[in-house]
Amino acid sequence: MKRLVAILELLWAIANLVIAYFFLTNAFVAKTAIKEGPPAQAALLLGGALIAVFAVVLARQSLQVLRGPLAAEG
Amino acid sequence: MGVAVRWLLVLAGLAIAAAGAYVSLAQAGSGTQPWDPELSDNFVFMRVLPFVLALGVVVGLFRAGGWKPTLRRGDEIRRFSPGTVIGHWIATIGFVLALPTGVWQYLGGILDVHLEFPLYLIYRLHYIGAALILFSVANFLAYWWVNGDRSLWVPRGQWRPHLVGFALELPRSLGARLAARLGLDLTQRPRPGQFTFYETAFSFPTWTFALVLITITGILKAMRYIYPIPGPVLLWASTLHVAAMVLLTLKVLDHLRYTLARWPLMVAMAKGWVSESALRRVLERTAPSIPRRVEPAVPASAPAGVAGGSER
Image (cartoon, rainbow over all chains, first blue to last red; front, side, top):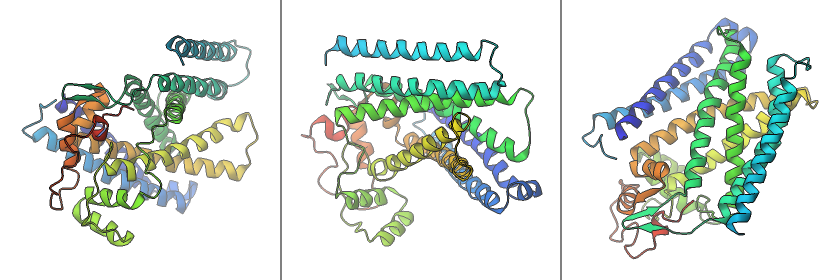
């Protein structure tokens, strides 16, 4: 069960990394600057960076569980 | 309050909520309304919302009436009641529906990108998720209000030891930095109570803040078609709603990370029951960066509630 939960959490982390990618890349495109302005760009940049960091930490945690000897516990 | 009366209250709440939802949906589906599907869904959501909140309160009152302080079965203690476990799952489904759809609405608006299927379906899922979350908020607020359980709250005057415990749970460099900034003495390890210090000093307060923020801003945004909300208020509500969405995205990621690393906590939320010895190990592991004190984190003679047996 623990392994299954770790796989699901890894998938969730990957989905969040994709979201972070969209946040970060769109912070720099001209369309956002014209349509939303610098505050929205800064928000996208900060939000994207934070989501990426938290998603990477969760992904590492999930991988650690999947690789660990007690992965089948529970 | 007797069991029969409590059940009667819940059944009455369910019947009223179902009747409210039926009338609202029947009106929306009658074909006589001039609104497009997106606006129609918005009206349905706003009309159903009071019933959803009221149902949450009634269910919370029902659960509080049957609250038991401690239950034990051999080495296992009941950390969460079945109502709390179910309520947690309902909130989880709400987040799974509301967060991705909210992100899509936000990014879709910025990027001006549209999917093959109509946008109102995304909004519909978002409203369903939001309704489930609001039901959960009302449910847990009423439950905690009536049963008097404040174990997730930091007691008055206890913030400093809770912050010390929290700093000790963090990675060493981060904890030391926090301690230096707040002037905390990390040589004195406080004993955790029913929850870890990470949960009481950081996790629960930030969950509360993010949920309050997203609830208020979400309701303001949703009610703009039935009540004239001033433009600047609406602009701030929209901005803060997005900020709360990002905060909740981070909270979910952090919550999953924290509980996966402390598997008995995950088991407790899935089954309600948890092995006390496993839970004790989790609590003892919370501050590995300082020398272990002779006194165990949870005394062997302590009642189950000390280790988290007091159900919620």
